[in-house]
Length: 86
Image (cartoon, rainbow, N blue to C red):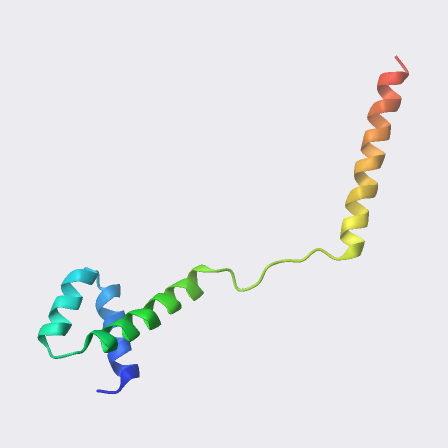
């Protein structure tokens, strides 16, 4: 079995809910080396992390930041003007 196929097998077993410890024991009993097992689990863990992370993060543009600051100042001045006028 190719390393990619083995990693896919490990991935599918984990997706089905097979506990890691049980899967490792079964793989060792099947003649797989600890290195092969570790590599397959590393591929699985990397895939899971990639799926859980957002695909992109939103970075605010300079214009958006300036707009927020201006709006904050306008609201603050309005509140101060209203409080000072009483």
